[in-house]
Length: 56
Image 1 (cartoon, rainbow, N blue to C red):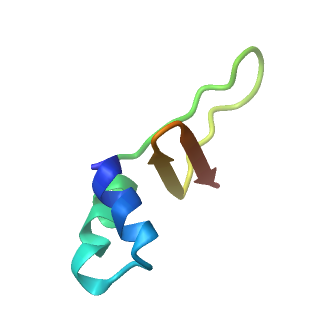
Image 2: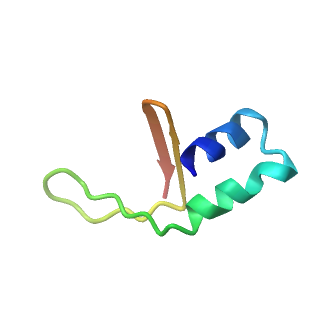
């Protein structure tokens, strides 16, 4: 799913590929901080190879 999402992003989010973005968004991903801190529930999560980004 993340690979398809990365391809959609690289392609400028064409209409035929945005379903991958929605599928990742619906996964309800939670990021656990190392050490202390609150769980982060990002609105958007991108993983492309060795690069990862999120927006909360």
